[in-house]
Length: 231
Image (cartoon, rainbow, N blue to C red; front, side, top):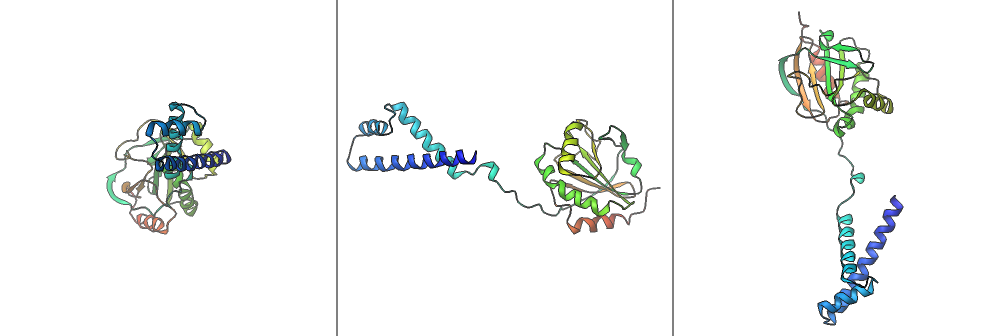
């Protein structure tokens, strides 16, 4: 594909170069516009005004290709540490399913700091930040006071399983399909990450992708661990 595109680019550049040289030459000789147009068409073996239009379209396409890089060549900016906005709302009753179909409830994690992340395989920002969430999870994998609830939205279990296997994710992944989570766990943008303190209160939220492996996130979690557990 790259070789084909390169050959096409070389051909376009060559065509444009020849076209410009000939136009300038005829202009300097004060040839009429109609005559120059016909001669240019003959020059490129199209033999008609329609052929000339094709040449000009090729020129415009070449110019666009040179001025605007293809999306596949775009290099995303590096993720930044999250700016966690404060919250102070009681966590709602919230159910979600593991990839084996079992139902789980947020209330089962009472007394823990819980990192709740809403994401989807269809969301570029979600996919980009997943490795950093995995690294954060590995820090607390064996810590009984910290839990992770990584919840996929608008995905099928099969898509989520394929994504997990492809990216070698070991953190707990759940899904809720197209069912919206209860407020205040109702993100207006994805990914969305919430922090639940041991006292049962939602204490923080960040909307958008971020580098969750940054040391500032660990400090934030350690701060939340100091909250008294809910009675």
